[in-house]
Image (cartoon, rainbow over all chains, first blue to last red; front, side, top):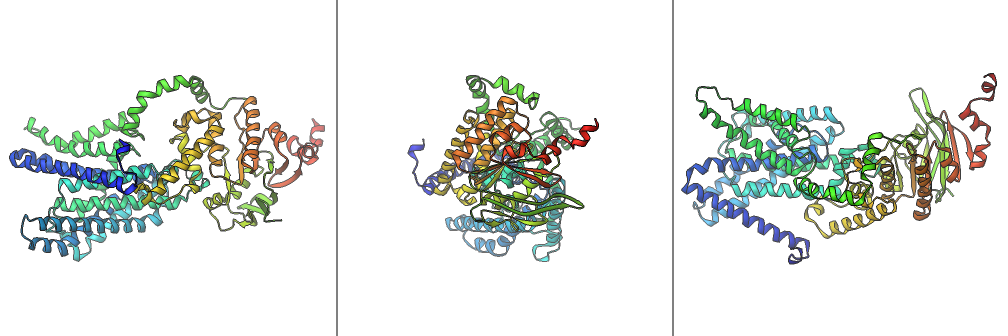
Length: 369
Length: 262
């Protein structure tokens, strides 16, 4: 496989990008046509878009909470910054221009895509700036204190938005075009996963993990812990801004009430449930936790006389999951690591020999002299 | 002369409130020197290590590393000057693999931007290939290659100690600080460790300063020994000189008068 790929790094990535875009585009067209002939598909495909947004959110928070180990509870705030930036730019400048172009023309499609990318880029930048401003002072704190401070900052961002008349204040921002298609949402979800994965497999990611594991040891190894914490925070916030922008296009309306700490907790639940530090875990639990409450809507139809038990069942399932797997679905490992380890770990250890002794040693603690 | 020494501590004193943990400490370490730091519990040895690595700042005095003052420097800057350390109670990155632990040790040498990491540029590939090769070399030296992809927490105790040394060496230091490397090891493991420490000095041509309670190890390999008691340097000299030094014997065994009263 490797030998058919070009050697230059940007050419190789370009090949992957084109392949990825082609597959996504195909799926998107299939889904659109499917919904045309089979309208029942419309609702699940809308949920699918929401799943994509939540994947982006969960994976981005996982960089901060899982990889760098900095427990942040302000993710909704950065999401709001991105959402409002993109929505404001679009409603104010981009949408009027696109609307003037002939409907359904290629020209309109191209301009719309360009403006979408532009406003999402702007959303990423503003959210990153917000992340930097919040992260720099608060990342000096650890653990519970950091959680409380980020929670506070998340709320501050929301309240600030609530007081800006220009972007609708409490009335919310209306008239956002519905540009969040399956294609774009999964394009950015894929991009987020790629960024997160490549970071964690690099020296930057190793520094994140070192900070999570042991700050004092990390500093002794030459890792500037504050810098890497802020870096993780900025990258995570920036991607949350992207998710926020897509969320705005998806809802076609924004209101500060959408970005309360409840939203932050939803994302934290996804990350913790998937396993802190596991990218595939975040993806899987984002899928599960988005589909679950929607799927549970049908429970009401089975027992029409009961009150809607949807959220009760949802909460109970969350509790049961956390009780049975407190480390999350995948723990700190990735899906493929778990699969490959199961296969070869036992024979490999047996081949080396001496592992039985190691186990004994560890349980007994340091040998007594 | 001062520029030649790897480490030069001048009149270093640190106080925590009313307690003077280390007072007026002086030490100069030449390249490739093997120095031992001993003293009873609470003598201030680890505090001194923490000052040398920048975790604590001395209240008075100055520490020069390779001629550079560390007054304004953070611990991660000091690593860049060529000082690496191990910890008394092992501080490995437990949930990471053995290989990753060693790679993080060399962090200052394999740095590149997040953009390079995401785009997988040539810079990324070069640095990662180098990190992999160098880390594997170190693991070979410490006999840990076959455990390279195991999680550090799953290693037996002795291997964890060795991995910590490997991780510190990965930073390519000029001065290696070992904080009780033999703690919790049995006699045969300690003897093996003595040889390892000696080998490291010869192979990497670095200076080593080690804290140790195991007299056999300290007397066996150190060329010079510094003895601390209640934060004060009570003796400095070769192992023979230290063995026959009255103040040292007193610090470790108590005053002769007290013995006579028994």
